View 1 (cartoon, rainbow over the protein chains, first blue to last red):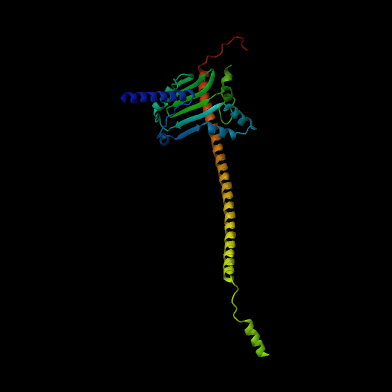
View 2 (view 1 turned 60 degrees about the horizontal axis):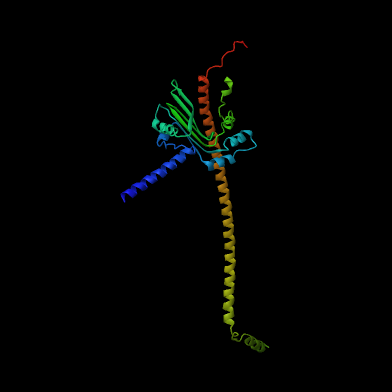
Length: 182
Length: 111
């Protein structure tokens, strides 16, 4: 009886880890709850756009307007966008372990670190990861942390970086100055 | 003359037994009238009820549409904010990468 119970538990654990693997494989990160941080933060941005909400948002983008049309194109293959941003008035109020736990998820197979920025002066860390599957970007993760703020961005789905790039300069999206140094 | 008139009056006002089934007919008519009145009220109540249902459905649909529109606009706002934040962080990274990247070698042409 005991053996049967153990086997059942092992099978259940196996199934759960498979599910967790599948979750990671589709590019969606498990973001911590960050419970209680809202009270300490001076600014909180929590954005959870699942496929249904993304579809709804897309319906409110006017295809006749070029900037809206560009957004529609940029999000065409995207299944979800999840953003957490917290800004504080004092240094390191937030549990860095929570942010690190997200970083750890990005060591899973498929995720590739595209950019790693470490600024000692501003104590800033920015990491950009791409989930590459069959030579396609199927997920994007950005983890940016500073003493008084951290931001986690997780975009799930097929990402066309070129189309994302085309959004620069619109809706307050900063214009990247990549081409200037050519 | 006066006696004749009295006689005629008495004749006219003499008690007469109602025809057979008179009471039944009266009672049946009362019942019919009551039923007709009840049907009329029921019909009006039904019409009012149907109108209320249609109005409530219209109001509900309108409210749902309004709520959906608000949710859509909020989702759009969130989408733009998410893209703005993504762009902001990509910008920091690209700027840092650009700072790190070596300047292109000067070919000495002085151009």
